[in-house]
Length: 234
Image (cartoon, rainbow, N blue to C red):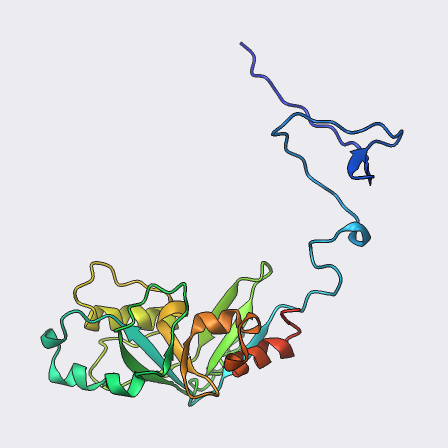
């Protein structure tokens, strides 16, 4: 038995008096559940935000070399850590009342924190075609507006990690392998587990940076970054 093939038609139509009509005024009727692709003029659309031009995708530094980041770690067996490893964690009283958790985060509020500093990038290699990292922490958007975070190297205490992390995600994995020994898998989200210090001296997850222009005035540094790039919540 031959397979039934569904054919598609392109039908010019106008939205008039609350319904779609063809060029002769006949109402356009379709079966329930019918799928269609709309090709609508910019002047007639009300929901795509065409009233103002979309900003150019962001690609800029947010935090300079020397800025600090703190990584939230869920340590269920702190007594199993060596004294040296425990000594590199930020004391819990220092973070009390200074951490702002994103409501979508699955990170435990009793997490402990490990601090790193954003370092200077290595000197450029001779005859290298690609631009080296400028260091610090940078934010970039791809064509679909997905946010990507990149960094230069990190300043780390000696003797904690067996290898040098090449990215923020890699750093998170390596720290989890050392401190979160109870976990079967050592992956995580840098947007939920990595925190930066805002102008109010509190620590916010990178999720607040990712959508900084949508948040309140307390994330003034993130809001200013996105506002400068042409974004706003209006």
